[in-house]
Length: 120
Length: 363
Image (cartoon, rainbow over all chains, first blue to last red; front, side):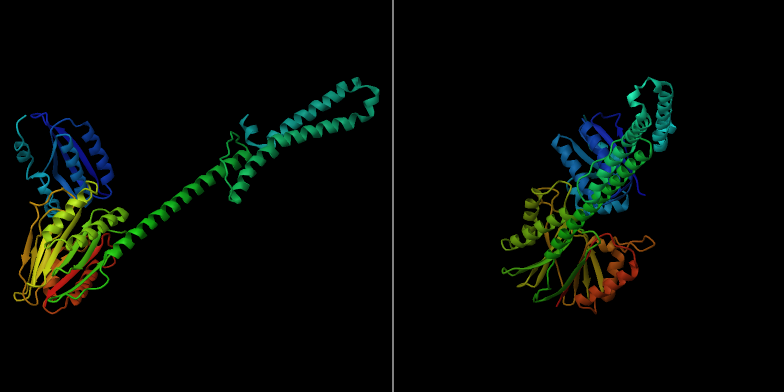
């Protein structure tokens, strides 16, 4: 049974940035639990940038993409921004195909994502 | 104490035994105090008192509690409203009451499940009706093009749709789309897009304008997490030219008959419903076609379908099938051949997603 765990890592260097690492598969079954967990994190979030690190994300379906869109929209409403980084090949394919990079900033590595941010 | 509480027999028998003893004692030691006139009736009187007490014991412990239980049982059996039986008894009547409560709880849960199942299958029926209604009833005649398309829905209503729109303005449009999610909400978005494309095709003269405006209008009406991937082909009858506008959909396959090679082209753009303004993100591009060339549109249900080893069918296999049959088949034959190869690959595995394939051939 596929699982998905997420781990928030507040950045020591930059208080405005929180990195959330995804581990596992984002599919129809893992979706509800992940959604709930991310919602909780979003509600408590007071920073400016939230980075989703997908290094260990093995799969994402269209529901997952839709969820990323809604997270991005929610953060924008509060003057914050969502960034995505570090994709496995199949996840990169899905994200590219649907055109998500035209709406949310994507980076190959976490370092690139962090260094793209304006200094706080 | 518990052994008395647990058994009706003890509850009734023991007190009655006690009462009988008391009566015998009362009679033995107090009988002489009874006035002379009542003495002949002494035995009858004792017996009457004893029976009255027996009856009361039975009534309290047996008749009345049973009546309460059977009243609810009768209600259940005759289809009238019934109530849960509240009792702290642990004797046989208590067991009966708890049994009744358990059984009715299970019945309620099962009835709920059945009702939920009915509601869901109704929703699915409406959803699949909508989906079927959108699909073209027949392949229209388009001078210069021959086409064939079909959609096989998965067990649960998915999000695939396609349509062929002929207009009076000299453009024919063919689109294939895939909405996120399943069931009724997906079907409603499908119908919105279908209506928008059809209506806008009567006003605009390019796929770009149709896609940009469909997206703008759709975005304002759907929730952020829903979107629809789509690719819209435009066939210009006068110039006999084919163009496409991509909106985040799967690649399209272009079979070049002369070389016998199938090109896999990414159509670009961004899915409908993600951002309100896609004027700078999508564009309409042309596909140069020679006679005999083919274009194949498909949904991800085909390439993500797995066989029993867990392997996906994949774009490569689809591309190879198109190359194998492209030169010698009509669109309908190509469709049949690819379906056969696909069927052989996936075997009996149940497909979880809709499967759509549209093939067109330049005549």
